[in-house]
Image (tube, rainbow, N blue to C red; front, top):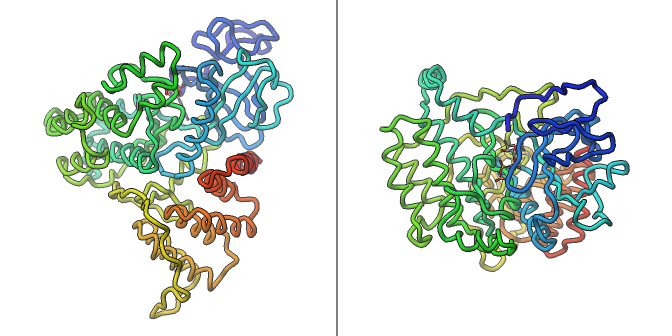
Length: 490
Ligand SMILES: Nc1ncnc2c1ncn2[C@@H]1O[C@H](COP(=O)(O)OP(=O)(O)OP(=O)(O)O)[C@@H](O)[C@H]1O
């Protein structure tokens, strides 16, 4: 389970061995170890070479791999297909896409969610794998996502170190402020998903990853729901469903998870973390809040996780942004762009690649409007006192978007387009805004315009896929995701 330890083979360079801990010698043709189920070292999956085992979760193994051309590290998870039925896998794929497309700064992006079989070893053509003809035995479910170097235990160890605590105080921060900053990000990611009607389902420590000590990611949206988590994370109302799921009715757990059960898991996680990392006087005031969130009856918990976080913030006073951004040690491979430059999160949880970085730790998150479509735009949106450039309008739109004033953001983007209709980023931003307003047809038109201008931007393809999904055009959406993947790996 250790992230940063590279396994060194004991035998000669050509002797095959598996990446398990401990490692086992393999027969030359063996790709998956018959003892521990780990992949053979140096296995290539499409364009990716698997480098090491990151850990073993509830249903499979997670590996670090690198893109053979760019050297970009990724995390690949493989789990046997029999652990999920095909309908559930499809549902998980859909959920992965929707949460990924929220582009929330703390939701870990899943680049690809497909199937893989041993037969594809020689003929892999990138990250997309055809369904195996040999049935489920040799078939694996595969997800590919950004590699994030830090685990929760690294964060805990960091906070437990007295020199680090001192450094935090010297920077005008504190362990509690840093902890709250991290919890706010986790809460914001979950709330963004809840706003879209999705629940995580297994907020266990392995799904909390860090790219720096103040930058956290929640992993496995969509996938976590396939299996119940262990105690103490399993909310009481999920016991029966978890049992049913262990007895073969996997759908039971999938259907039973809810934002209220995520709230329970979040509180259980806090309950583990806080006493390990903070002084008693710093976390004790939070215990009644956590107790409410851990109530066995979901209706007695907070109405939303967002309100729970609000109470935690109120009790700990509004935290300052911690002045630390110490990066975790990276392996000898290029760091991903996303890790070093997190983009902003809008308060709806919809994140815009083009938005400036928002350092405010938390903003309230309203639900999307479910009412009728908002009225059409006025022909002449706004007339400024001083003429603005398209870039000014775009920035204004970004700011309004971040403030969740989508109607005004629309006007600003339209104004930018009136002045310069040839900039893909403005059409992309316009599409995002229509998407946030659930005006999917207009969002699609905007994304198509962006694509017309820049057909090679994976983000545009991804967003187009998401809106096609929202319109029920799933096959076309899949084609878009595939194109986005191809462009990313090019
Ligand atoms: N994207 C990633 N980048 C870096 N490490 C990762 C990534 N995803 C997972 N890991 C590491 O791999 C380990 C195993 O991950 P996996 O998702 O299989 O299980 P888990 O999250 O520990 O538990 P669960 O199966 O309950 O989700 C994790 O504990 C984490 O340390």
